[in-house]
Length: 97
Image (cartoon, rainbow, N blue to C red; front, side, top):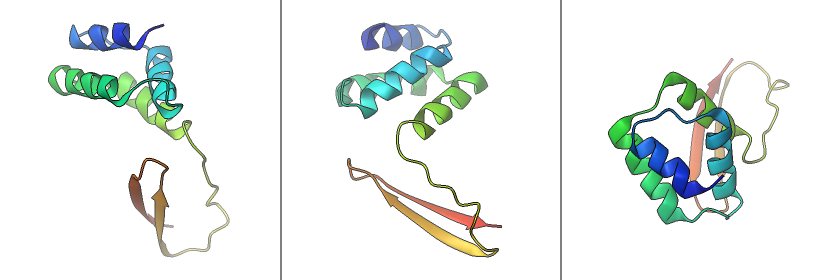
């Protein structure tokens, strides 16, 4: 599988498989797919859109690309979860149980 083939497939309006999305996102997270190829893929997604299956596969691939934490032991209430990645991205989630 090659990143360029996945980019061209999306550019041409075809639906990507779960395996293709996992390969692409996993390769990017591992530093094997450069940012400019991810930018090209993102532009193809912007113009062609994503199906609900692709969106679910992307969400799953992103979830599995890093560490996860179990919040099931937290008491009831509202919390702010602040995460920062090696690439400098920041995510904030408001969790209310």
